[in-house]
Structure formats: C-alpha cells, structure tokens
Amino acid sequence: MNVVILNGVLSRAAEQRVLPSGDTLVAYEVTTRDEEGRADSVPVSWSPPVGKGMFEAGEAVVVTGRVRRRFYRAGGATQSRTEVVADAVVRASDTRRVQRLVEKAVAAVAT
Image 1 (cartoon, rainbow, N blue to C red):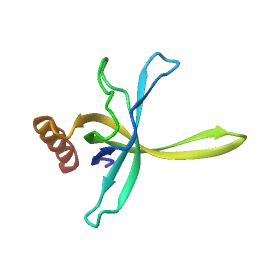
Image 2 (image 1 turned 120 degrees about the vertical axis):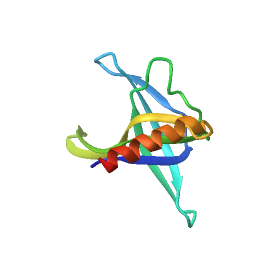
Image 3 (image 1 turned 90 degrees about the vertical axis):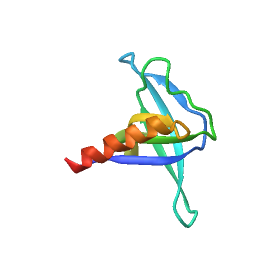
C-alpha cells in the first residue's frame, strides 16, 4: 500500500507546466515539521482540475497521494527523484475537505 498524507506549508509558489500531452502539471515544495520542530521539504507534483491548484508560498496545505521515484537522463547520466504524486491538494483551513481527504486515505489503508 502506497498512501501519503502531508500537512505542511508551501515553501515556494507553485510552478505550472504544460506537458507535451497537453496535460497541466503543478509542482510544489511542501515543508513539514515533526514534533521536535525538524523540517523536511517534500517535492509534490499534481495534475489538478482545470482552474485549480495555484497556491501561494506560505500557504498551509494538506496533500494526499503516493510516493514515486522516477528516473531520467540528465547530462549523460541517469538520475532519480523521489516525490509525492498528489491525488488532491487542499488548503489546511478548509477543514471539511481535509477531513474527507484524510478519511478517504485511511479507508484505502484499512481495505
């Protein structure tokens, strides 16, 4: 089972790219903090519904999705990147949507 729930703050503004297929991909950097205050920066990619997904740096968000490691060629060498592929990204202040997303993720783990 590959299920991720992130609760954090966008450390930079979202970057939108249009892929050769015509799909839109939005890239985020989400900073999470543990109980001791240590921070982790997590790259997140998402193909949002049309007109959604452009959050500003500093916004608190909740992300649900899965972890993916992708490999690519750069400078004649094979490199990799581990990222979260988001199913949904919502503002943390939208408590109803956050609750539904978390319940859905927990249900996926429970089945």
